[in-house]
Length: 397
Image 1 (cartoon, helix red, strand yellow):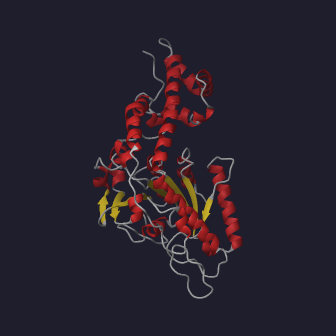
Image 2 (cartoon, rainbow, N blue to C red; image 1 turned 45 degrees about the vertical axis):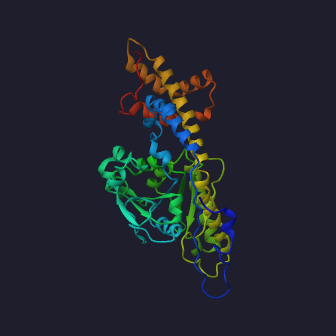
Image 3 (cartoon, rainbow, N blue to C red; image 1 turned 120 degrees about the horizontal axis):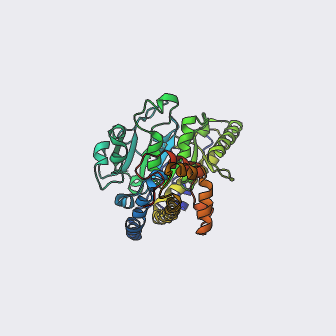
């Protein structure tokens, strides 16, 4: 969909810093639109006929992630932007589109109060959330069933005649707030909405402001929702050109340390550092060439999203297949352990308390890798508390 990454290094996109006078405005990435590979039809057919029926039977939507529909395979690649308020998410989208878009609000206060999908269209127009979610041809059709009017009143979409939007659908999100504003004052669960978008997104940008990298408890819960999609997550530190080199070093180290405590990984996570909008970088900062190279690296990742869409969908299908196989075997083992007569509730409590032994027994019996199994504590909690029909340990018939 986009031009080769090498062309992003050309002088037409990055202008060298000048020793005198204001720095010129930077241009966004150019796109080369192409058609999807027809192999997606085969991926969709395999999922709908083979994988999804087993996911429904194994209650995957209650334990792990939502189910996919036909429209999810036909949709353009999706890029999800998540962050606290005033970190530059909307400004970054405007930079990519090279124009304003309907419903756009930019300011130092929490201006974006709704989830917004920015899509391609021949003319600029705004789409209300209820109308967008009622169209079965859009990837947002399931939102009305999952979250209802409480969320749809805070969801909208728009179409713009932008070449970038022709290759990718961008999802702008409200800034994560603190305390009651994030939990009680919102009429929907922010974490559940992000959990719905995460498996459908092809790339997730986790954005931070260089002046406030502290991660609140509410934002921490949102980041934890993204676990399991580590290959999609890109961490972006915005507005870094306003810091001195010493401040930038300390802030970058603090952010990497904070993320390492949330996103459990032995490796440090790559952080894109720069100023990601269309305004020139601050004049006189000798780190400006570094910021420009970081912008090129991030835009290269974005340019690869449409080209790698087919490979990403195949990878997601394989991952879901491995997960549902483990889920089905676990429920089968639990069902076999339940007594046909006697105290079923007591046996159920014993199995839930010793779920680690169940994991080990299934892993050894079927020669499965430990990496295919879900998180033990989350699985135990869902098994013990879910009110969905059949989410408890099923009794044998």
